[in-house]
Image 1: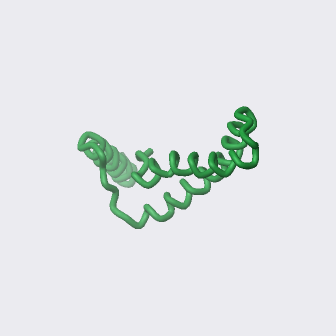
Image 2: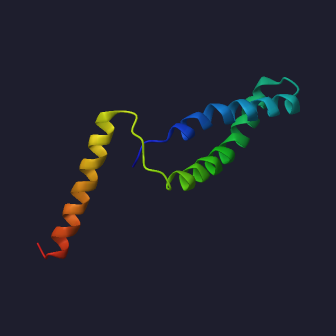
Length: 91
């Protein structure tokens, strides 16, 4: 499993602020209803947005935030490649 992109990381607070602002007017300042409506609406919006971000990001080479994450990811890919090669060779 890969780490989320910068776009996906920024999408959460942006989505929560926008949905929260929209919900505030509908709930007329009732905090309980506002928080419930914000969570209810933001959940599918976030899911859809992260799915679309994932589709777009497959076209780009990943940029790693930490060098350690890059090293671990490349090692995992190499292990998978070696296992697949070993299975094909009947080992």
